[in-house]
Length: 295
Image (cartoon, rainbow, N blue to C red; front, side):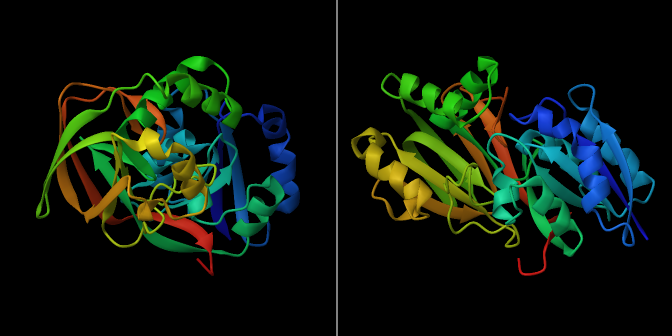
């Protein structure tokens, strides 16, 4: 028997009613010949990290983040550099890391996947020592993350509304990236540092990103991106935005980003306050995760 804990964020995403029914669903679908379960609910910001760290210290085999990318980030913080694997029941607004791992969006199928999953080691990132598992970045997407967090409503519709509202008034900035043989100055609409391939909702900002290559994909969208906005939007969802004339890409393990001012920055889709200069690096094989055997 293996010990598994489910950490449920009751307020993430748009499926609060479903989450209240999850304990019964887990009881029904989890293979109890394989797993001995423990279910807890978070009560405040950062609680998931505390709980995950406690379970790891207790020697649990796996801890499952039940929520969106923010919840996954919190649980991962408690599990990084341990032998306890991160599992995911995706119930957030974007679910970028879960989608990268091909975890089903339906709760029943995601629970069933845990029954035939295996542990793999993957990379995680640090931005000024703050952990990210999917992406972090600055520019327009970080501004939208900030507006989205203030909105009080979740879901793709709210996100799109803010994109449309701020798109025409946003001013690009000049950024300087140094490290791993790179010395890049770029006036950019946005810059994403990607450990995994997408922001969420199957919007692939870094289609070729791998969580097992020890590198981040640096995705720089040109300041003239508005000229190609419809095509860029299509490319985001067809996994070929890296072929656009409005995108420049690079790979690195350890860089420093120099900004003109302290503009919005996001980590795994959540807005955070950061200094102007940001040291970003990838920690190779630092996180154990549960994934399908075919991953």
